[in-house]
Length: 280
Length: 260
Ligand code: SF4
Ligand code: SF4
Ligand code: FES
Image (tube, rainbow over all chains, first blue to last red; front, side, top):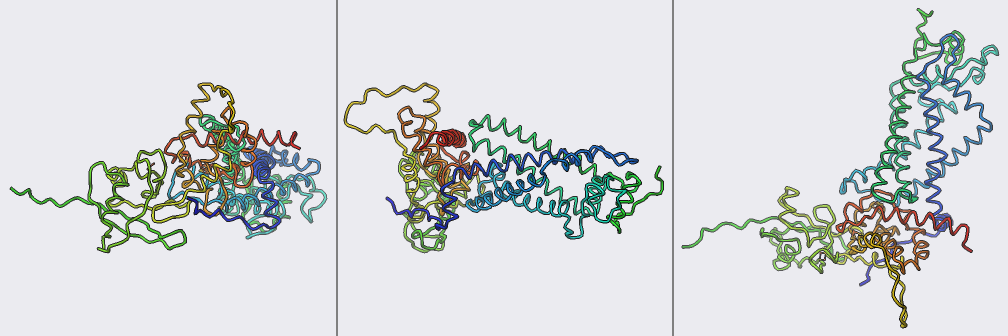
């Protein structure tokens, strides 16, 4: 018998038909855009940030973290890299939203761990998008949102009104530390945002291996699962290192004299009192 | 001597009924005596013979579908206490013991149009088998000679896929397969692989892959892996999805360089 109504076709707008015609290639590009440009960048970024744990020289303000930041800022055509990342994020998120609404999760009925993972992938995607936007808007574009963040300047010369003599003063670590020490809400925000993003990437790596046909047996899916879980742990420990580095940084004791001067110029009313009493 | 009257032990069956796909659904409850080794189909047969609800109302008998009664045809698939499965292989006593409740809840599958009550129309699955050309092309009146041979390893792998009974459990549990989208689902993907691996069936491989790379194809799978957990025939569906994924990757590269 055939009383079944065929599933309703989506209305044939030009966008829909473009998406339909290139369905397969778009899906694969969606997968690739998440893994390569965005994912690799985030790995590098987390690794760089982890350098905060080494602190800095409190007389010169030099440290590994600052060195890495300078390296990134010295990359040629940085804005091209940045804008291609935004392009990749827009593409990945746009299609991701579209795809999310083609499914209907059913974790209540079928409460398998994998099913939960499937739902989490969609939720963490949204969290990651919001997080990345707020993170970049505040620390990179220097938007003053919620009064939570200091504008971030890698070095003295980037901040307006800093006298020429202080142009080379490294400010990456103190300013990042200040941004995070302002409130535990910021720390929580970063904890949730980074965990979601890292989960999204590692789980995406795991499922991509199935979609592309790399792991084609249950055993290989499991093995690859361990690799992805290992990556998750590694990246999260980089994140933990950066958090510890930023939170244990003592704004009064660990900054160099130059840094304190620039800091007071950039943050005239510091919400964290700088205790400079027993500096060496 | 008259045997002392022991009241019959009973349990309740709550059934979600519907007179047709566009009709509203409603619930009815029936009381059924406990019998040893009684499956859901015999429970439904009892209700058909005694269509009186617990509130004493005489109703139309409940409609359901079944065939083989030994879990090989898939016709009797429905949702028992929230989990999709074959009702013929579901024993009432075991089900009650498993859930620890005094009633069993029966609802039709939600991913197919309801014909009536627990009877759904699984036509979409059969249409999907046509879409992926789920057959071996050996039409003709002349003698084609013996077919190519298969290795025991190939046979063993393909045997697993051959067990599919088009029951729809995998689709019912799949978050990506819905009534209003076009996703083809694990069943048809596994069957495409089954025929792609057949030495003669291979002749249609690239047509199958073209179909599976379109909208609703394999790429719409979200890797929730529910399908493989609910498949009563234990078909390695996620392996099939990954293998077709690999065939599609290769197919896409090949057609990029060589299709006209
Ligand atoms: S893996 Fe998940 S999304 Fe893919 S077919 Fe199976 S249940 Fe559906
Ligand atoms: S693959 Fe398994 S669950 Fe799906 S239709 Fe076939 S037998 Fe049923
Ligand atoms: S009646 Fe055939 S599977 Fe249940």
